[in-house]
Image 1 (tube, rainbow, N blue to C red):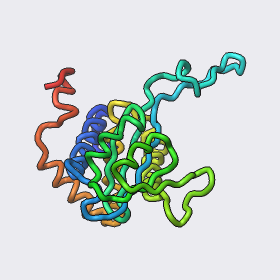
Image 2: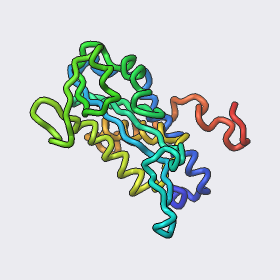
Image 3: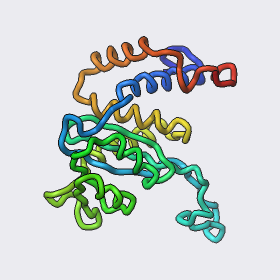
Image 4: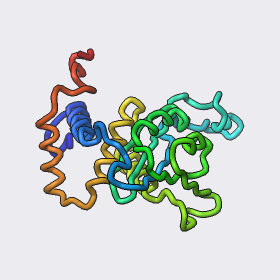
Length: 216
């Protein structure tokens, strides 16, 4: 975008994020399960990469907390079967429980994997669990819709953005959700929708005062 529009990298960066912020307008107040009886739930870790040392003897086991950067965050997504997608960013999957309860309509059937973070949701929702060590789908439960979202987000991170900083992770996740929900709409209509959302926006929440190095 910087090259095509003749802008500085910084200007293109801000413009892209303002468009992501506009896309997120469609996700505001979204409640999952209000028009679809089933939804899928999953989480994935992003960021916090620690580069291993050059020599093998100097390398540390990055699975231990003391050897991690502390910057890793979890994207949790709730995806309706054949419907809408809603992402959130949290310190861990267990930190997302209250958000899930507030954003999923009671009575919705939730499909999830065997991660212990989701165990407390059984008290509020009918849960169908799938053990991915045994199968991706068992005819009763699967999380393929949620996995489709993460596939799109991972491809964007690895193949296009290369690096997604923690403060902006939510916006990238919201963009991936918007793309997931609108993937069957033609490019021209997608451009019109994003432009309409952007033109109807008030001053940016994320970047107001960015050029002046302060937040308003």
